Each structure stands twice: as structure tokens, then as C-alpha cells.
Image (cartoon, rainbow, N blue to C red; front, side, top):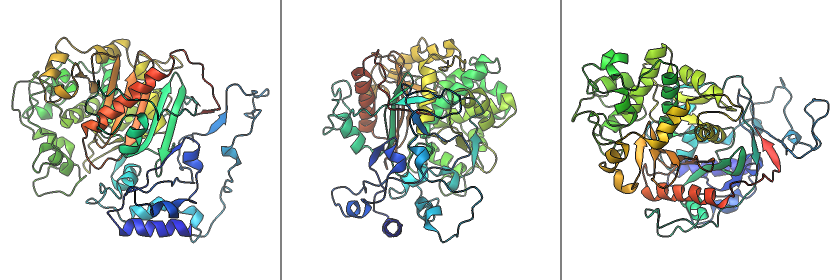
Length: 516
């Protein structure tokens, strides 16, 4: 561990130094070593240090995701849980429960903790610390847990495919960087923290870069919006929300705000007339004021006290129902409606109606402000596999692999097909030229008209890709210092699309193991 301490001193003492970023496969990602760290720190080629993965596994109150034998291995005849092959994870030495260890013992200290001691409200997004922050949100901000429930975990059969040489469709996705031609180029050039592609319960590819690992949550940013959409959809299916109803029917406190006269559907599709600028790097923009209100950046004297007070102060600038305009505040209104119609915190509602039903292995979490508001527009965190499980439910038409209904088929179909004027409203927006033929429906992006695909997109490189035609789900977590890069978005879409097309539709899994 001496080498680890030396590295951490270098990292925390040099803010210009990039974080660790070598992707490793599913198993390597949780059982790597620190052996090659010293040599990689000295490499000048890239400022991002490579070849370091974390040797410890995440402690969690939820069922740990571990590898077991493949489905073709001999099964346990007596039901004791033992199989014909030994579990490599079970061979790791485990501490005795209740055994006390000296605080000076390095083995009980997570190296990441020493990095977090240098993070504050100003620095949590610094490139040197960003990847650590995104996997330790609960250490930095108040959060509410979204429990996984007590149901069975949706298992994935894991393969070890290498898709790096697959070519990208640069003609369809012209925003791709000129130097990127393959899946490998996208992965190595977009600050990838972890990525996963699944199909019909098979994890086709899965890799992690330290400090990310299978049991660790990562902030979703605006992919959170797509999760919120499903909660609203489930409450609509239950008769608690009507998309055609006025927002103020559920939230009378917004009667004097810019949301007066807007419907829930206007908000779902980001077509309200509320004045809101999503310019993250522009001083005085509404999105920066939102960050101040929820204490994710240093406050100014005029900052609102929490997300709900912030929303009540928004004004309108046009008629509701016009062209699409991306506004994070719309999702926070939806989260508030979910709380209002149930009388419970969003985290509890999201667990009951969605997260506890999808076969998640771990709880998700959502940041909260100091006044009890839930920051649902971009502050939900989840593990890589659990987000894939969520995406699989969408791809399957709202039903889990075990047949449990989470969302109605009608709600899912509406996301993919959109409303009568969804495509027109999107084409008239500033986002239209970036995704010709696309649209935005119920907090999901439809990137093009040519495929049966919807995506969730989050700043700093997050994406959830759902191809309903091939049942392919892709998830990518990143820590890109830039909030928005069209090249990275187009590159990631092209990457997942190339993989979906490369894998035969009726492929038979060649499994080496099954993971929960």
C-alpha cells in the first residue's frame, strides 16, 4: 500500500493531474492489482493515469453482485448452492465477522477516501477529482436511498467480447471527431468510467475504470430524467396522474409561476413556455441558479432556498406547447408532482413503483436539498448493471424478464412513437440540427427516425441506449470535464449502434459465467 499512498500524494498535490482511466473487464475490474501503477504515472502520453484498478469490493447493504458458474455447468443436485465449478470470487479471503483490526492497518482503508478529503463544493468537478466525486455522491451531498426491494435480482450471463475494432458510421453521425473511426477510439477518447452492452440477459461487454466498479453507484446526471419519466408513467397507469391535466392541479404553489396554464404533457416533453437557460457555463443562467438553490455550487445572496422555492420563482416567456426546449427544471416539476400525488418522498415512490420491480441488485439514490426537495433532474445515481436492467424493461415494453409489469405497453409505445407533432416541435428547436429526424418524448431522446431506438443523455458523457428492435441495451458512464460534447454523444450512439448490428439477432450465449 506504500505505492498507493505515494500515488495519492501526487494526485492530491497536483490538481492538473488527470484521474485514473484504464478500462478493465468485469472480473478484472474488481480483482486487479496496483502493481503497474508506478510505471503508468510516469507515462507522458496522456494526462490520465492508466492501468490501475481497485482490488477491494464495495461494501453495500444490498445483495452483492458476484460471479457464479455458467449455465452449462453441472447444477447443484441438492439445492445447497454449490455447483460443479468453484466460484473465483469466493476464493478471496474474507474477514471474520466481528474481528477487530487496528486502525493503522492499511487494508481497511479505501484509497479513495484520501482523495475525498481534498474535495469541496468548489473542487468536486475538477478533472483531477471528478471520477471520484461521481462515485461518492453520498459523501458530498444529502441523498435519499431508492431501495431495490426484496425481490430476485435479474441475472446476466457474461461474455468477454472485444468490440473495439468495429467501425463507426461516420456518415450517419457526422458530429463524431475526425480522428475516431472505431468503438475503441470512442472508449479511449471520451473519459469512460464504465460501459456495458446487454441483450436478452447476456452482458456482451462490460468494463470498469477505477474507482468505478460493479457494485458502485455513478451519478447519472440527466439520464435521471428518463428514470423520472417511468415513475410518472407508472403513476399514470395507477390513475394518480393524468398527462393532460394542468400542472397547478397537482401543485397549487406554482399558480403564480411561469407554469400556470402548462399541462403535465407540456412538462414531460419540455414544451412549456417557462423561461429557462440550460447554459451551464454562462453566468446568470437559470441552470446555474438551480445549482445554487440546491447547494451543488457555492451560493450567492440571491439563491433560492431549495428546488421548490426555485421553481415557484420561474417566469414564462412564451405560450405553452410550442417547440421543444431543453429545460432541466421541467423534470423537477415532475418529481414534485410524484411527491404531491402520493404524499411521500420521491425516493420512496421511485422504489415502490419502479426500482423494486426491475430486478435491481442495489439501491439507487437521489440527491436532496437542505429543505427536503428531491433533485431529480440530474442527481440520481445507480450502478452500471442496474441501469441496464432498467433499460431492459423499457426495451421489453414495460415488462421484466420474469413477466412482471412495471409500465404499460401504451406508455412505452408512446415514448418510441411520440405525439402527432413531436417531430415537428423538435425540428424547430436548437437541438433539431444535431439529431435530424429525431424528437423528444416523455424525458427520452429519439435520436433519429431510422431506428427503433430511444436514449437517455446526461452531461459529462452519460448515456443509456435502448434498441427495441434488437433488444440491445447500452450504458456508458463518463467523467468528461466538458458538460456537453456533440462529438462524444454521436460517437457513443455510433458505438452502441455498431455493436447492435454486429451481434446476430439469434446469437446463442457462449457464457463463461453468470453474474447477478
